[in-house]
Length: 636
Image 1 (cartoon, one colour):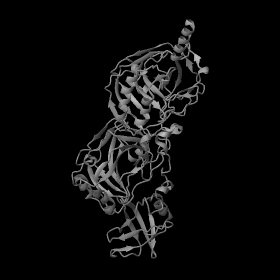
Image 2 (cartoon, helix red, strand yellow; image 1 turned 90 degrees about the vertical axis):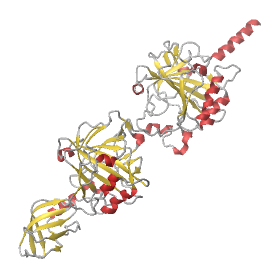
Image 3 (cartoon, helix red, strand yellow; image 1 turned 120 degrees about the vertical axis):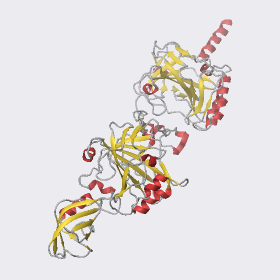
């Protein structure tokens, strides 16, 4: 049958049975009412148009047509424009027709061009952990009798479930959902995968969708509700090894190569059998749409991180037996939506770096840190800064600190190479800092280092003083004792960082315990690889590393973390006197870790003030030199 203006051919088969029932074969034609068909001078009046899958049943009356006509195929041409328009409006495909995915938005009453569409590419570095995404409750997923029928509907293979048997709740869903069906999306060959969602640009061979409606709603009501439908998406991965999975072997034995009425499933196959060993606590969540027309934006999407693994030969049966290939919609833009992730799902390391650390391999060097998701790096109270001593304002409230357990030689728990620094993590709830105008007691969490290159004259400190950059800088990081870390990074004074400059000793005297620094740097050869860590067994305290540095003379300002996400939550203390360390020991940091210039460039002070402790800002060694000179003069 030729539909006017569409070029679509239909075939009507005549059967010599009462009422002249016709079978009309056409993909997704939807029409009801009375039609008039004309062919070879005969007018056929068609009543009661109904359909089952892609077979349409007509009851008709004719004039001049032999009731005893033998079975034959007749090519007809429809003259009714209304039917043509209806067919064109409802017909869609993945390829080979007018309404391919790029044109689904043109389908009447469709939402496929809106802003909350699915599927998407899930970029794992951009997701946020949400602690409300708790475990699911999956009712009757393990029942072997809930998968009732299977059918090829011309777009996919769909398994229909027994009504009101299977339910989904929990997992951060606000309601209980009744599960209706599950279906599949696939590509062509093993070299052309066909999952709808992507993970960091990777497309899996297949994807299974388990579709559930909010309990108590009709299909139409659910499609109109922004959270009316919950879909669980499972990636399917192809394997070469192992036996054929019995549940999947049984399921694929029902695959059919044409659209026909649904077939009963007689094997005992449960949904849990198909999911197999996937960890259901690890999943992504976002708000989206149906991935086929009319693309209603009514879906709470759950995409599980771990794939189902089945033999590649079973995956190949889907395109091979059904004749359907590349039955997946391309990904859509997020358009400002946020993908969240369950707490059990591991996140990738941050993709940021320092300019000379990863070179061209890193997209997010310091000048682009502000582009990172959830980044504060482009705000107005950033660190580090250049401290102009003449602009520093004396503050009498900047009194002496109280350092608790800074002398404990068992406080360092382990040392690690973070890929950006060397960090020493402390035992919990042991070391504390208070006083110094802080106003709160702070628990000391860790200390780490910033340095330059292997050159002896290289600068690597983050803060500078009157534009002078020191070779290294040590940061002792403390959290307000009354806050969690998550709360602290959101609070303007949630963190207190003590910054100590490190330089080589220019005189014969020293302000630090060189043996302690030797023992510390001995660990560097054991943590040359990123993310490696070693338990700390040497008897070294923080006091040993700081030595005799004057901790009563310092600068104070409010700033941020100096690494992403650069939260503006830090009360900064930068001590005026530097720690003195042997040049060769300092060189071990870039030499052993192969990380160079691990410091953030200085940031604008903007309208912030820098404060300084009262009294002389002259460093201790200079005071001692002047005192010695006075004594010599007195002896004369």
